[in-house]
Length: 176
Image (cartoon, rainbow, N blue to C red; front, side, top):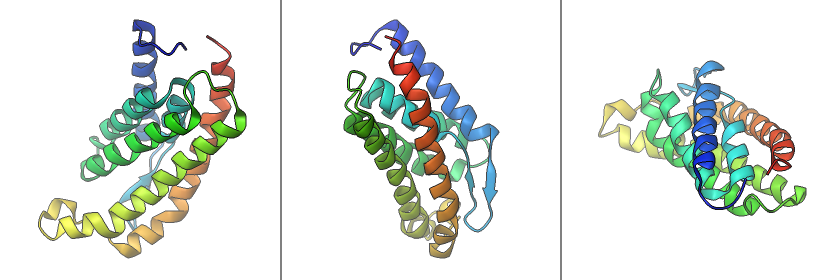
């Protein structure tokens, strides 16, 4: 994909945003200890950052999974919007955009994105949501024990996002 914003790029970003939403909604495994859930939407967030760069990564990450949270998990929309948007942005920034083809750099970017997701949800679930939940009961959905309990699922989700995003990036990056 070229670096300037075109109608074609808009269509690809919209499609990836939809895929991120679907990947987040269709394969949804509840994690009862935290009231969160495991999903595969990170594949498309990481792919967007690797393939298209930071702004598309931000858009796909912020909007796709947050829209998915609106269906069944609205208490997580704020956290998801911020965390997954940051994930996509960071992957795009670290990965160097569409014209950098170094596999080491792209893999480092993808791993950083996965770590942002794991760390971001841990912080929100262990500290931010419990604090806000004291004032707004809607956000009293998790605690420190729940955040720790969700770590294995979030780490698995991050690994799948990294592997899936990298696997799809390489063939797509050859198509310009």
